[in-house]
Image 1 (cartoon, rainbow, N blue to C red):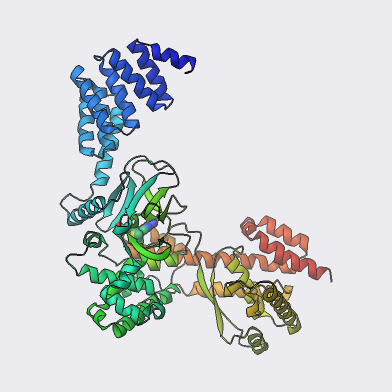
Image 2 (cartoon, protein in one colour; image 1 turned 45 degrees about the vertical axis):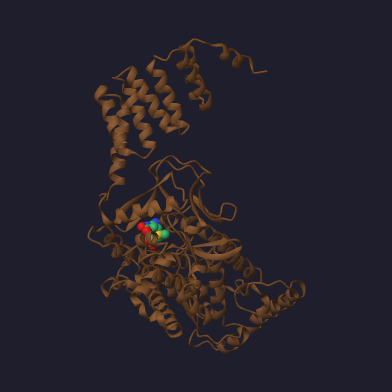
Length: 606
Ligand SMILES: C[S@@+](CC[C@H](N)C(=O)[O-])C[C@H]1O[C@@H](n2cnc3c(N)ncnc32)[C@H](O)[C@@H]1O
């Protein structure tokens, strides 16, 4: 039996009453019910224009935009100067992404009711949307190429009705929500046939040669090389099935640091990042030379083109699993999403749907940019591999090299202990002592700075070896080398050894950071002033942002080391009081407890 009030609703014949109930259902977001009630109101009185516009409002919610337009037209036939009907038509056109028609209808609504706030608001929003969506004229070659690519995607079965592309400049684009997007919605689907995968690269003429010569194992970046090679071959084929996609790929790579001019590199003077740039250039050249040698037809492609395409590949491909096989691929449209953290969308390839999908992890409002997270990465990786800097990045690192002290009498013993004769060890330090890498950094410094009774270190070595034997007996799984204790003592987990040693560690940190800071021609404050200038180019700005990020880490670590150092001459109470007074040291809570207070208590107890 239907509930009592529903039964009553069924019997209602009064059109006004039906409309009121429809309004109630609409407000309660019971759209199907509202649709039924408004339809009944129309049946009861087909001459009331407002019933049609009310029903149009529900139809918009139910994404029946054409029905909404038809209802508004009926309303206008009944009541020609009905502003609300034009307003609803505008809303429906906006949802259909027909922005110009939406603007026209809003204008008509405003001619009738110039002061209505909702109409004015919609008009402003539409105008702004139109300007942002049309920053390039329709006949701009990029826009024409893009429209062709979108058509190709749609005809091939891709779906992206809730998304639109915006051009910030002719070669910097991003994806925006064309309509409100709800959490959990699939916002992009690209079928398998439209994805370029590594397997296609292996099967291409040059790819085959490379494969046969074992380059998959011999190149520094095999995946990127195979895909680059595929793209370069396809671009030369007038009938490539991927032609429309390849046409829209970026043409300007000057934002990638490996292409910086000498003048631009000067903006990075003093930064260890310059070494990373050089290493990358050499890696690319080495891969290029090897491919030319082993697959001679490849030599037709100039190294400049290969380098550009390599950067394009590394900044755009997705690691996916297709039919159980791990691969990498270009996914058109998906590669238009810019990076932002935290993650707002998630992507994967699903065998069920035979395609790549992106899902929203949150509600995204119409007009907002839709981002993908490229992961938690240091700015050096964003800069080097993607050509941009991520502001307020909490994952930044600076490489620091630690050498043995020249007068270290125990150096030989230490090198024998760790079975490593390297003169230095490099760490990518971060600005908090809490990260695992900083434990390793501190541990290594304790080892290098140790100049006391070597027996203590030998005890740690014995303990590490014992742990290794136990490990070998108890576990035969494939483990990551890094954490495999059977590889012996690595000086990775040395606890604080003594006050004397820890003082040397902190002094060394301060020295290393200061020495590195002195390499830069400008200070953090000067960098801040430079960033206020308006004449900086994109690359200059990124370089200054990048180097200030490095300096920030170095400065912070130096600050911590210098603030903590005097505590090692105090008793526990005084040390803790000093720490409590220095709010910046809150970040070092674990280090203070596990290292500084621990050592003070241990040595005071003697
Ligand atoms: C996967 S593509 C994204 C689409 C790209 N914007 C386009 O127009 O083709 C990655 C490139 O977009 C740019 N990019 C992505 N996220 C960015 C961000 N948060 N800030 C600046 N540039 C970004 C970088 O040039 C990067 O190499």
